Image (cartoon, rainbow, N blue to C red; front, side):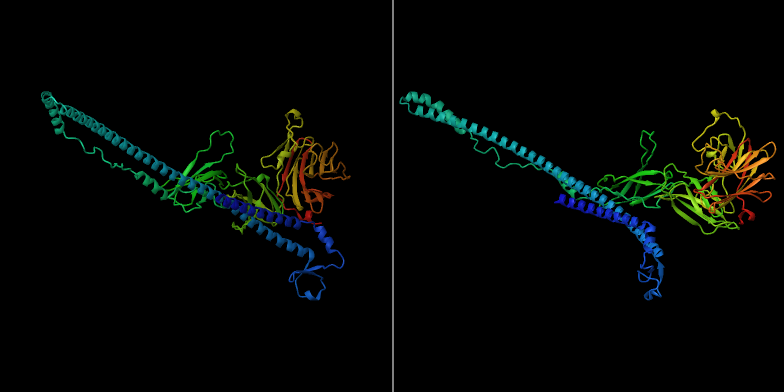
Length: 623
């Protein structure tokens, strides 16, 4: 009967999980329908004689000129559909959260079912063991008493047999005397009678004087031995006393229940057992395969079903289990659960953070050995009096970079937090970002081996034109023919402005290029780069504006030593200026297929310095 009940419980639990999976599958189908092509919707709207608006008050499709809905809120079909999709998406998200809660609850119920069955089996085995011990003890006592009674019986029988033998001997002696007396009595000869009668008379008188043992020498009652059953009573009483506790159940880790160095641990006891105290055990889970011995196990005695474990490592996984103890004994250990501490604060990489007038791309290192679930970026505007405005947050960032939309002509303070199930980390060190101009650095990993970059990442040096090829280290990302390097811009279709300071005798190329521009060709010599080139000839300074190897015939009379570059990615404009004279040099009209990066090259030894963070002058931004 119990087996049938357990099977029914398992079947019901499996049915619940199947229902949960079915609901989740239907939600996924709804999501696919929500992401259907908008082109189909637009085609549907363009069908003749179809309703062209949606009544938000009535919730029906209608025509714009319908008198029945004159004073109602009318929405375009596309807008109404998007609004309904958003509402449906929100409902789906809430339902998904409930589904996750139901799955967690179902998993918890499974653990409870298993715990109840294990506890029942253990109690049943314990009861059977107690009764077997009682029966065994009683059987031993019974056998001992039976053996004692058997010994008494044998002793009585032997004593009765001895008394019976003595009685027989007396009867034989009496019979012999009687026969001797009769024989003497029959004598006819008086003399012979008198001679023989006296000895016989003495023997008869002597026998008569002897008292016969006619008393029963053995008691018919048996002396039943007393049995000490105190230990049996104690064993019987122990069946009814307090049982040892059942195994506790470790609860899953609760969100935001940890710090960098501590964990708040909870467990449950799904029975009416009495518990005096619990003992919590934990050890670090290490991914280091070189460790041959397991990590040391720590333990803590507590009274409640929760406690806080301290002095732990940040963003580390710990395996925990617990036992319950009362006066009878210790429970089996619970199933082991894994908890994780809060991560360490991430480390922002200022050299790799770039910004423009209305956006910034922030990059950072995790700062943790173990992976984290996500990151949170917090930013606030820094006021002129040193204070800060309201903090805004971008949550659930999956990787170590984030593009932030900002307001122009502002200064912001940015922090990063790492997040896992234990909670968010402390804030990272702050980073100040300005949206007054274009800020970026040179990408060292793209630089030709002959180039050297300054510590601030803004100046490039070409020192030795004849550096042996054997001394150069190339990668797939470095330029290997043109002595060049790329810069890093915010990947948005905005406006950018920067300036370059060059030596008078340096031959250079400056402009923009796609990120995947060919590394084995010269800048401007392919269709993925646009640049201004300076060539020093014996007679003059020659300038070319190259794209795909072609340049217009342009003469520049005054040599520009500070070159301004203006990029309007959305309009497809790339312009070059003599910044010192505010003189326009040339403008490319382009159709950029991808985001572009600033590019810089030196064709002869020299130096080139990048100037960023500048506000684009009016003569550049005005059409």
